[in-house]
Amino acid sequence: MSVDLGKYATTVLSAYAASLVLLALLVAVTFWRGRKIRARMTALDATKSKARSDAAH
Amino acid sequence: MSLWQYANPRKFLATSERVLPALWAGAVLCLLVGLTWGFAFTPDDYRQGSTVKIIYLHVPSALMAINAWLMMLVASLVWLVRRHHVSALAARAAAPVGATMTVIALATGAIWGQPMWGTWWAWDPRLTSFLILFLFYLGYIALWSSIDQPDTAADLTSVLCLVGSVFAILSRYAVNFWNQGLHQGASLSLDKEENVADVFYHPLLICIAGFVLLFLALVLYRTGTEIRARRIRALLLRQGAEV
Image 1 (cartoon, each protein chain N blue to C red):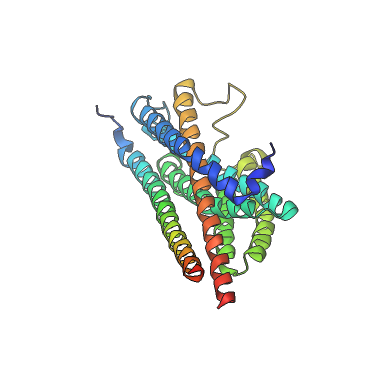
Image 2 (tube, rainbow over the protein chains, first blue to last red; image 1 turned 90 degrees about the horizontal axis):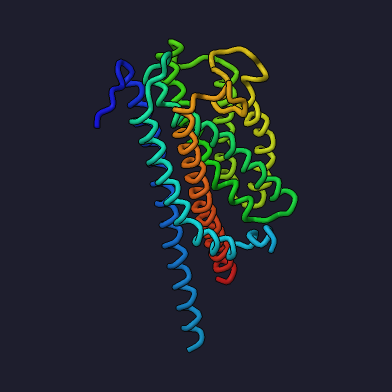
């Protein structure tokens, strides 16, 4: 399947490329920060429960 | 059952974890179908040629740029009136998404405008109000980052959001307020005569649904991240106080 964009091929393709790159960046940054914060939260919770069990013994 | 129960961070996180897979899946599906249909299976416009295919990115992103700010306005009002932290964090989470949508709308508009109007940019009412809206987004994000005290940051950004709402509304209705400039009227209208032709309308609606679902998924996910980040801050402050 090929789409004939005629003389505006560069215009249309650059609009799609720019938009998809921006959307992909937004999603990537969102997941990257989300995972970083989740990992930090898990580590903090683990430290907290270790400190609690140490105090109990 | 009340809407306010979602002001509880635990309840919000549990609900969003359940809803998010469906939102991501819906967003990807709608965007794939809508963009493929629009790009590959719609004809060229008799005046604009193949550049009409940019409509499937330009219109949904512009709609979301405005609606993201309006969502932030509602969340900010809830924060100012009822002091629910989740609403302030949801507004914070939505800002980078809205800013990206504004950049996409401005970029695709400029790329589309160059062959159609003969210029990348004009100080047209709609273009200018969109640029100002983008500057408000940047100011909003910068203000959140520059204040250490989260409640003060939420207060000040909420006030900024109220002021910026004027430009969000102006961006939407600029063509109606000032009947001048290069930008044409709204592509979607309740008046069938003014609407885009059916052949472009249906894939456009699917793309809009895709952008709405993507926005919701991103905002829910990012709000969850903000809630966790706030909890980490509170835990660290408590640990610091205990030491």
